[in-house]
Amino acid sequence: MTSFPAPHAKRTSAIRVLIAEDSATSRALLVALFRGASGFEVIGEARNGAEVIEKTVQLAPDLVIMDVYMPVVDGLDATKAIMRETPTPIVMVSASASASDVSMGLSATQAGALVLLEKPHDPRSASYEGDSTRLIAMARAMSNVKVVRRWGTERVARPLDRVKTPTHSMRGEARRARLIAIATSTGGPAALHRILTDLPRDIKVPIVIVQHMAQGFIDGLAKWLSGSVGLNVVVAAEGEQLIPGTAYLGAHDRHLGVSPGGRVLFSDSTPQSGFRPSGDYLFDSCARSYGSGLIAAVLTGMGNDGVAGLQTVRERGGRVIAQDERSSVVFGMAQQAILSGVVDEVIPLSAIGTRLAELVEFSQI
Image 1 (tube, rainbow, N blue to C red):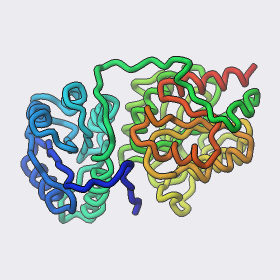
Image 2 (tube, rainbow, N blue to C red):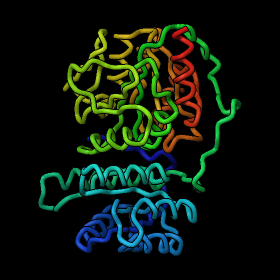
Image 3 (tube, rainbow, N blue to C red):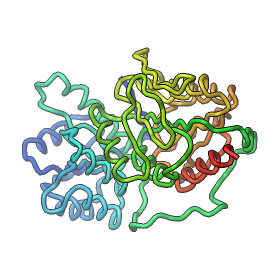
């Protein structure tokens, strides 16, 4: 089972949690779960979106656990209001992997919620223990994430926002780009939304993506992205031929790779860095198949997934971009890649899509 280390220093006091859930049964289950978990204190409960906004202001919790769908004010609008009035780490939970539930939850992450997770089911179910453990572990880590006030507009990147590493920042600029590979985890859906929105619809290469996500949610992520960005976004299928201008998401619990001929390859081999699909497997496979024609990007997320695979990208002449600390929800995966010395450029999220497009267009000349 994957463990999620806290992205900042350990707390010395209990994590104060506000539970927002309209179902009395589900709310009681979540309250009991967090009261029974070491290091947590449930300081309040909310039955609808209006209540969670009010109680977040009143109680100043360290963390809000909120259901995707809430009466009076839905989870999306409640998230927007909290991030405007009293920025607080928010974990969205959903009992359903339906397209509408996932879409609402992912829209909330775009508005400032940190992550969308599966809600623990009936305590008598076989999945309850695993789901509960994952929720508690992620809640513990997310309570330490520093969130900022959202006013509904995003800072526009200036040229000075782009920071290049001093070692080999312009290596391989003129090599022909044939594939973009991206790996991300916590905070990834919102980051992918921004990057794919910024890419031109007619970009001349395919994009392959590993996003760590709860079981059943990846289809909803593909539909949410495809319906709101300019590119076609699909869940990759075994043996599928990659097409320029299409983004392919790795399927749940299978490693995503690419053949030299540009076809999707799946593997059921051992998880890498605790994940399947993993960024390590993706980057290694793409580097071996595309060599210097690969552009790899590692984004926000906990842990160090992707670093080992990026070593292969570096060895094979590919180019590596990392998201900067300021724009990352959790500066873990990107930070570890930077520290390993394999990164060519460190740039903010608001500039990554534009930079990828620049690199692809320049290489086609």
